[in-house]
Amino acid sequence: MARKKKELPLLENITITDVAAEGKAIARVDNLVVFVPYVVPGDVADLQVTRKKHNYAEAEAVCIHHYSDKRATPFCTHYGVCGGCQWQCLAYPEQLKYKQKQVVDNLTRIGKVELPEISPILGSEQTEGYRNKLEYTFSNKRWLTREEVAQNVVYEQMNAVGFHIPGAFDKVLAIERCWLQDDISNRIRNAVRDYAYAHGYTFINLRTHEGMLRNLIVRTSTTGQLMVILVAQVQGDGEMEKFRELLSYTGDTFPEITSLLYVINNKVNDSIGDLEVHTFRGEDHIFEEMEGLRFKVGPKSFYQTNSRQAYRLYQVARDFAGLTGEELVYDLYTGTGTIANFVSRQARQVIGIEYVPEAIEDARVNSAINGIGNTLFFAGDMKDILTPDFIRTHGHPDVIITDPPRAGMHPDVVDVILQAEPRRIVYVSCNPATQARDLQLLDAKYRVTHVQPVDMFPHTYHVENVVRLEKR
Image 1 (cartoon, helix red, strand yellow):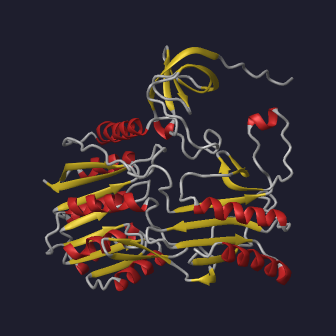
Image 2 (cartoon, rainbow, N blue to C red):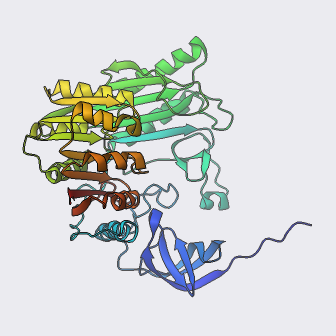
Image 3 (cartoon, helix red, strand yellow):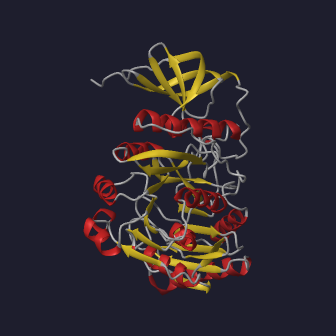
């Protein structure tokens, strides 16, 4: 006999009190902590519990009786379904307040190190259209919202191009307008979609991997250059010719595209890191610019997604480094060498280390483009490259700048840093929780002297944080 599913409770007239991790808000009911998306502190709502554990629950707001004065009206028609901008309902000054709180809470509760007064977060002047890169997915299975299902909406086209629905890898939400990037991105996506509809192009089935069109990547830059990459699964000369017709249409319709590229991906996954990128029209790159420095951005290059706010982030990092022109600087997790090249004018020499060989090639190219001769770059796993032998060979760093991935630094890397004993460490992080963990490890020899949060991603819960450490 089938086990009867336990009915979950409806919690009525509950006040939302705080913001938690991953953009969800918090309510407290007796001894139960309830996590709720798409509400803000001060809202009073009925909450339908969707999942319950011993001391916490997850719920959805099914009716809001009182709207908080911290609320903002979401401006995107896809808000609440797409999952990309969970904080559109929270006024931007309040977003900054909670991001500041996230940094403070992580550094104090996880790091447990002595802290100076934490500087107010640097908000983003641009809160819409701030991203320089978006990747859209094609699918032959359009995601239908609850309202569309309830109303039995029937679409002539069940193909879609847009974003994956959280938790549903094979379904894609059809995007009409996304506010994250300049509107040229919307116009290109919709034009490609409409041409594909009109001319019978097949969209990929993400389960069976049948179909032609897979991905569309749009990269913009502050220099006005524009890169578009179309990714398709192509079998035979006939399909290749049809794909070329779509590329020609895209280039002819949007002459502002300076780099029109394509990738043939006949694999079962969407990654293109191991695939050749072909130039269909224009250059195979675009440029970003910062303080007169030009940075070449290729189709696989990493570049901070919010270009204008990245400049402020790098200014903070350079300021915290306190360079006089005499220092040997190690730039760990250097990526395409943006920080290394950005600080090189104020240093004697900068050594950058990065895992991805292609990124290191970009870093060297960026140094050459800008006539920078005091940088050295090395590719390899950080814990394998940064060793005592490496430091003996290349010199003891006066300053270390580190900008690791979300997982933070490997313990072996922290150990080598402690052995190297630079005068200063500048720690740039996209995850204050793992940063706090690493600060606790560094606390044996270093004290935190400056903390500066920076908001790179408005309307999301993500926050960057820069910390300066001084040798005790």
